[in-house]
Image 1 (cartoon, rainbow over the protein chains, first blue to last red):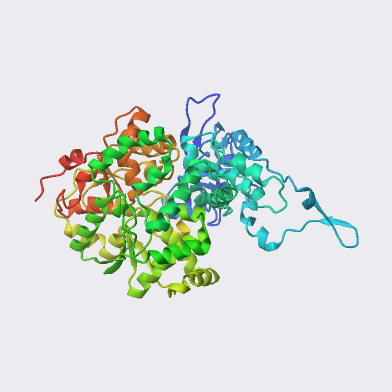
Image 2 (image 1 turned 45 degrees about the vertical axis):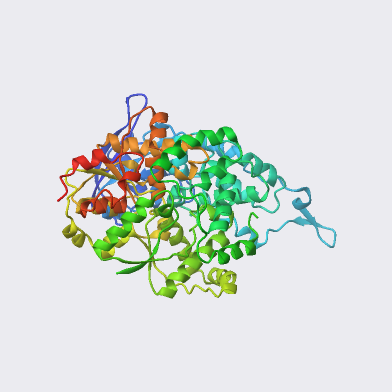
Length: 324
Length: 293
């Protein structure tokens, strides 16, 4: 199988800007991966081609890159699949991170965000060890059903694919981002953790959990099915349960649910008002747009009739006792 | 071709033009609709943040209503589609979850057996109506109109729950635009987020996303954009002026709901399609089209 590879090359010491370079090569075997091809190119065609790789088994997290427009591990991406789907293979470095050379990016900002969430356990004193009946000291076991709530987050190999694909990071580089927040959830969910509330308090500050736009890109690209966005959603839920509700993000959820409980449907006249209530200054700020929408017939009645069968909806809310 | 119509909240609230145009287009194309009048909000991914089981139960109630009618569900909102697809997959494949949720619903005599299908209008147009039929139904070709498709997140991701388009390289909107005679614009923002979920919480981030994607479509030569999601529409249309101010750049980009663009090609009038509801005028795009025949 003859395949064409367009690979982004960039040597900051020589090049003004990154450029795509094409390489044609015979791929010996249909099971070959993009990483196999990169090695082949480096050995046979262009010794200067620079990329990171190590285990070749999708566990070290060294070789994430943007292959045909999407973040993937090069060692996990079959050439044949890409050729079948797109007819060619284009390889670029991860986004959001500075390119050092060719496909190698600067990972320091990634690590500093992971470090910022304190990626280690701060055990409760009583949870660090248990004293067994006969007096000897043993370790605390996590029951399997508890570990199941965060085992997929534990599977993170810190490759950075999610960070590269994150739409919030596109516009807000300070955002902690999916990988660090998924890691943060791992410690919040750990029953041995002693500073759960302090962690949640830190995570609800600027650049934290409330800046995720729920675009689902991190879920889509993660090679280990960590589903970082789902971890962020759980952190938000935990924060609200912990009473950390003094944030527009939390208000958005509670107000949304309150409207659905009353009417069965979201009332788009009430929702924005619930967000700014009772702050007069912020109410005045949304007024001009509200008026424009009103003129265009885009503001529904403030007093909507609840849907048919609203009693069923309200009963479900009562059953769950969610955010009364 | 008969569906139980799940309108979603936006089509009954801030986007009446979506509801109106979808019903008109369905009528012309022979898609019979029976509205699920007592269906509740899908939760828009927000209720799941508060309480996942509550959100699932409310959606199971909706699926059970369609199941009773023996009809598949059609959505006209990308966000509804994403949320309902995920909930439905969960309820269909995870039997213990379905039983747990059905136990919540039991006191009202509701039980979901797991047989309802949920499809977005976009998928119905491509799979059930078919591009050929659509091509033949065109009365006012979109020739000369350069349309930038804007998918939004929920109709594409997570793809394991949706399973229609390739999430990295979707083609359904493009096929549709071409079938209606229009020219499709290719740009990276077409599969990105419109920013809507943050619009009431952190407007600057939301505007940077929505405005940024619109600006890219404009740079690539788009006369207008089309989206299958009313939340994207709100972000791109209602907030466009604010995005322009933040970006310091004129956008003047007409934004069409999916059925509005289809309706234009089917010869429906501006009034039928509710085009006067938009905050950004669509006149510039309409002028590109030939006279209505």
